[in-house]
Image (tube, rainbow, N blue to C red):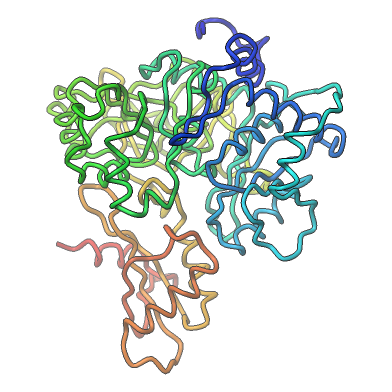
Length: 511
């Protein structure tokens, strides 16, 4: 694959289909003893694309609900071949969040690879058994008009400050900008096998999916049940048939607890790609000790700028040179500027990281107000205000310096503290709430919720906490539930009468 050529006449799904046409028996998906080929991926996705074109010709987004099954990849390609953007929703998403996503997205229809959790739906739902029938028997061939370069290819929903998720629209041109950079700059080779561990509703998964598929590689999935059972996880790690590792640093910290997770047991594991949160020097150093011949890349980027826009190969020299690991050189087609109240900062001067160029999203789906707040034009190009603080070194290496607002990342998942508060306030036992992060080495380790509780019958604080967590779990993803609860009679307030979250952050992180 020549990634120095122009993308103007190529589409992602066409490049993937070329592998199927030239190497139909090549493995595209490998889960234990179960494998699927590029030929099967093309055949299945073509049939579903024809079905979509015939039955749902409106080109509105479709929802794809499930885990990390092969069928999810089939549906992603079928959507793009038939002119639909797809919205991945993970199986473990709470019902309330699904309902909020549907209210924003207004999709054409829903594919439920796993059991659909809503009892009723305003949209057609194709369940797994019906999908299997389409994949195996749909024979009608209809002309397909796939997603163009500037149409939305996928939509990933992130947290919103009001409790309503924001749907980030990524065009095929955005996606190509990212794919070509990763394949050129991050050590990817043809036919590599990628770990597929991140949920498909998390844009880190894109770092595995499309670089693998456009280079004739394979995805090796790891299910949530394995990840959450350390015994299973530690037994699985030394046996993974992968060349490229993709995860958050937090997941790597867990994996490094397994002593046999090393180069001796995984000699083919050649490249580590990290994104989603800060990579600490401690994690990088231990990983270099375990895999001395591997390349370790620290990358950076928000969902709104298509996964990542900068990266750097972490070496012992880099670890020694920087007090905090840098996030790298910006990719060639993109500009990053550091702005301070509209002024472009000089090297070493801190300000807000603003991303400019072809990987920047067109904005949030059906949300012009939030789009206008975050997206703008900078010198004639699309730009996005990240809310991240940072600076450039004198040799133009980008460095991250924390958040400018109250949006944080924990274990790779981005979330708004205000969104957690919003859902806590909906819990019947909570009168007021403010959630704050506890840091260690500049990295969020824990969410702490300060609670003014309603009158209740619980004698012990742990009993109240258990009840609040159980009710909150019906509204939010598990990673958004605070790990610690502090009960107070009132929350501190600023001179303007607002809850003083900064005072609580200072209290939680006091030494």
